[in-house]
Amino acid sequence: MTGAMLAEAWHAMGANRLRTFLTMLGMVIGVGAVILMLAIGRGAQFQVEQSIASMGSNLFIILSGSSTAGGVRLGGGAAPTLTLGDAQAIAELPTIAAVAPTVPGGAQIVYGQNNWGTQVLGTTPSYLDVRDWRIEAGYPFTDSDVRSATRVALVGQTVAKNLFGEEEPVGKTIRIKQSPYLVIGLLAAKGQSLDGRDQDDTILVPVTTAQRKLFGTQFQGTVRFIMAQATAPEAMAGTERAINQLLRQRHRLQEGTDSDFTVRNLAAVANTAAETARIMSLMLGAIGIRMAVGARQRDILLQFLLEAIIISVVGCLVGVILGVGGAVLANKITGTAVVITLSSVVMAFLVAAGVGVFFGFYPANKAARLEPIDALRYQ
Image (cartoon, rainbow, N blue to C red; front, side, top):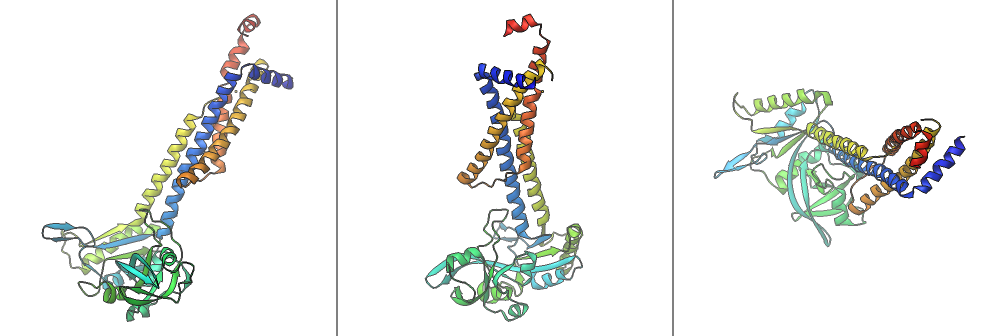
């Protein structure tokens, strides 16, 4: 009996080609839209998560104070209020895992006939721990290099590519501001930061080397900022209070006066970005599901439902193909990250097909209730 009904449903679809095509088109658009938007939304979330992971975990950045000169107010980091001593004191806090004082600056780097302008960071060996940054080749500089202000450097992947090409950078000598520096290590790739900056376009040197031989400092031992890593996520709030209290005490700031430094909780910023991306992904999925249109009972009812099921399944399959293809095409054309998951494809298929079959129930139920004479007249 089911076979006869299936044949009748197939015949009905053939007799009403335009209606069948339009119904199926709704399925195609609905499923394709759901898959495409979920892929783009989850791709954006994936990119944010990757950027957060590349920063390191449980991070604080402590910026030196702002300054005012000639009536012009400059932002945080303009006044030299942080020192290497501050960094050492922060490192002694019980909830601190690692600390890296940093002196940044820009410089033109020369190797042979090649040159490249990049960011040079003067810091300590702990910087690699704070940033969770591996050495791909060679070895890191040591505390001894910091004490001696040695002219050694670790180069990022972007710098290595532009200066050395296919050559092995470790062991080569580069010139920074006309002075020779030995490349002792190649940093592993980090990728882009949350603000879109290329983290691999950088060179690390000992902080004392940057202070004494590269950029100089207005006051001996001062640094631009300090990066600190807490021991655990749950220690972040208490650690932030402890850092503020410690630095205010060290800088002899009276109660009620503004701090001459700023403590930023990078984990809070990262979590906000991740939550925003997650909400965007869910919102895109919800919008896509609302776009999915289309259709579910016995004898005459079953006949009509079989028609709805065939249209829904075929339409949804075409929609899956177009949705996946569209997501891949969007990635190829725009470079936008897309993440196609089996769950999003199955969800889009089931929702659209389910809705299509469900809404096949109303006309099927109405047709099943018709008197034979009325049914013949409408046919």
